[in-house]
Image (cartoon, rainbow, N blue to C red; front, side):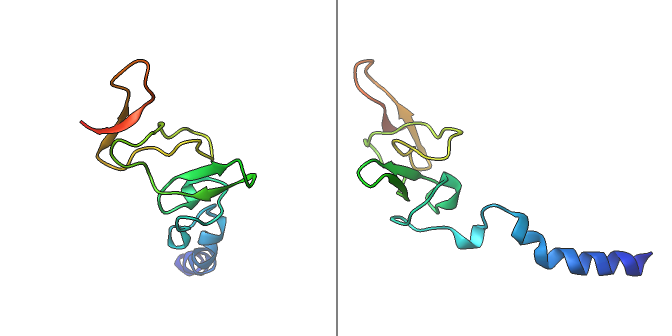
Length: 100
């Protein structure tokens, strides 16, 4: 029984990574084409309307325009970097990254 288990584990473990949609070791850098935000090292896949595609982009920094990360694959505007909040201090103005 134990031998069968060891053989099964030996066969499945090398192939286990093939079933994962996006591998952490192969994250794309900013500027690379993408189809889902989880492919990018920055976790932001930004739509490019001029080229009809999408590319990895850095997250928004302080005072930059932002939108929350959605469940969708591609962003229109990137979410804020870690430690910043995407809020609107004025109801007329768009959301920006702020320290809170």
